[in-house]
Amino acid sequence: MNQNSRFIVSILAFGYAFLYIPLVLVVVYSFNDSRIATVWGGFSTRWYGELMRNEQILDAAFLSLRVALTSATIATLLGTMAGLVLARFGRFKGRTLFSGMITSPMVMPEVITGLSLLLLFVTLQQFTGWPGQRGFSTITIAHTTFSMAYVAVIVQSRLLAMDESLEEAAMDLGGRPLRVVFDITLPLIAPAMIAGWLLAFTLSLDDLVIASFVSGPGSSTLPMYIFSKVKLGVSPDINALATLIIVAVSLGVLIAWLATRRAARQVRH
Amino acid sequence: MSQQPADNQLWRRIAIAVPYLWLLVFFLAPFAIILKISLADPIIAQPPFTPAFDEQGRLSASADSFAFLLTDKLYAITYIRSLIMAAAATILCLVLGFPMAYGIARSAPTTRSLLLLLIVLPFWISFLLRVYAWMGLMNNYGVINNLLMWLGLIDQPIQLMYTDFAIFIGLAYSYLPFMILPLYASLERMDLDLVEAAQDLGASRTRAFWDITWPLARPGVIAGCLLVFIPAMGEYVIPYLLGGSESLLIGRVLFDEFFVNRDWPLASAVAIVLLLLLVVPIVFLQRNQAKDQEHTA
Image 1 (cartoon, each protein chain N blue to C red):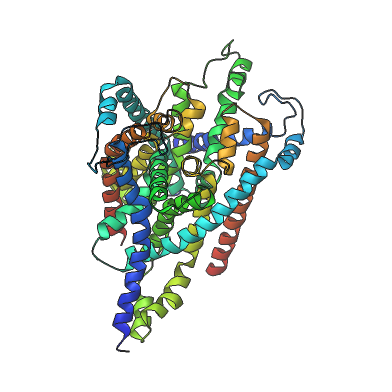
Image 2 (image 1 turned 90 degrees about the vertical axis):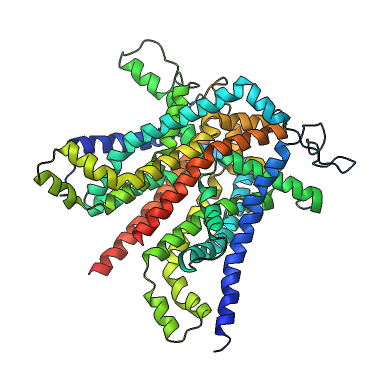
């Protein structure tokens, strides 16, 4: 019964074309020699060269990477704790509020999250003097807050899908709760933590709106820089940058997919 | 061994307290601050709003921003336009996403994992750059117009960019994966024998779909629709890059009130009203997820 009707197959083809044709065209046009991005002026790689010489882009990319690495790591720590609490701790006082605060950041419109965090930082600064300057630290806190929710949900669903008997057996054999967590639970949810970290990392690299709110003058992340350029229209060096990102992401995901498929096959044999 | 329960209690408390406190400070407290600032008056100062207590220590709150929001028709129209846009994009995502999710769930296991991967892949590529890709497509001299002219269907470029249509397509394009993934999750769990049994018993294909497939897919439909609708309501990047200067959506109005007009109280009031509009769908989504989780567990 693995048969799809012709109707379904054509919708699938249309859907994937809808998702991928725009991306393919960006890649094609990044090799366009013409400065006017929509007119084909022959094959060239000159925009890649200009990209590498653009120091503003490199600075912005470096800031984005630092923020993404730091916030993804903190978000994984906090999110794993939260996922563990939600999946294994049963009822406790304030649980409803807690799970509400975990799911809400994921759907909250970015303008609201961004505005609310900026106003928090401004108020904190009024009363405590911190943060004196908005930049790396404020963006990192903002990104940690929304991405820890994603980590929590991934870890929680992994724990719910896993049966509790291993942990219970370890406890019955006299394992102290903390040791059980470190020896049994954590190794079992490690794949979920890695997936969560990767998601938090990309969400951070991807964010424009929240970073625009909470960053101060002089600290632009990569999306902020890209946005300031594409506001003015299609630009060939952004096509080149987009191509680099698309190729890097696709290769990474493809390699990960092949690796998991191979691992799955080995398990079966 | 006797200290084990106490030890356990301590660790349990820490595991709850650390993420809890973080969210209270950086997620919940900011909303109280938004509410406070929405009740202030804008002034030219740093920060640009009146303090909550005046020199005499009296509480000063004014509902001027809310009054302005409610009396100026422009805001009401913008909220309604955002609502219609987000709803239209949600419907397009559902109409396209449902058969796609169904097809993916019904394909052979190896194809299935590849198809699913191709749905997730755009998530990892920058959102901004994916919206940007449409700028090159929908331009007056962009790929779509060039193709239509080459085919002889039109003689002159049609205006696609900077229209509501462009925003609609941009929203549907960006949020389609958010629709497909929850739909896939509920369709994949479904037992196909049920549909077959219904058909063996004489139900037509349409009847079998509405009586069996649709009810079983409902949690996925609800989750998918809300995951598209809620963020699309406040979208800023898509209307900014693809929409015209007069096609205002509420996310962009909030951003401009804050950054261009520097009217922080009004921007906060806009956010509060948007939040009130979204409370119902957000709570609905949470209850749906909780129910779905109980179901799996």
